[in-house]
Image 1 (cartoon, helix red, strand yellow):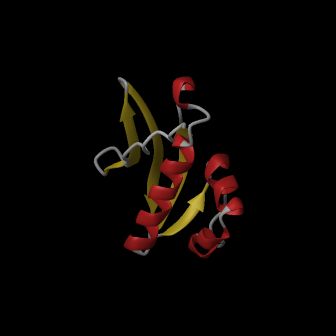
Image 2 (image 1 turned 120 degrees about the vertical axis):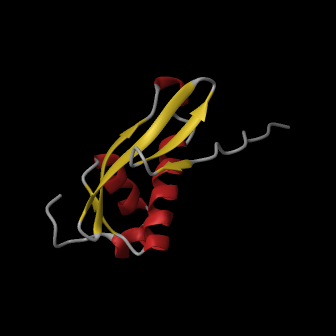
Amino acid sequence: MSREPAPLPVTHNTALQRFEVHADGLLAFLSYTHEGTAVVMDHTYVPDEFRGRGVGATLVGAALDEARHQNWSVVPRCSFVAAFIERHPEYADLVDHQRPL
C-alpha cells in the first residue's frame, strides 16, 4: 500500500512578499507585489527536486486563499498562476481584469 507524502506547509513571508515552501534544504516560492488594492503574482519558482510533487500548485492555492482572505484582487502575471486559475475556476472571481497582465 503506497501513501501520498504529506503536503508541505506554506509560509507567507510578508517581509519578502512571497509564499514559501522549505524542505530538504530547498526553497520554492511564489513572489508578489502590491499595486494599490491588487496583488500582482509575478513569479513562481520550484526547484527541480520538487517538480512533479504539486509544490507549485500548493503555493498558488495558498496565495489565492490568502488573497481571498485579505480581499485582494489578483493580477496573475506569472503564467503558472494564470494556468492554475484557468484549471480552478473557483478562483476566477479574484482576477482584476482592469489591470494589464
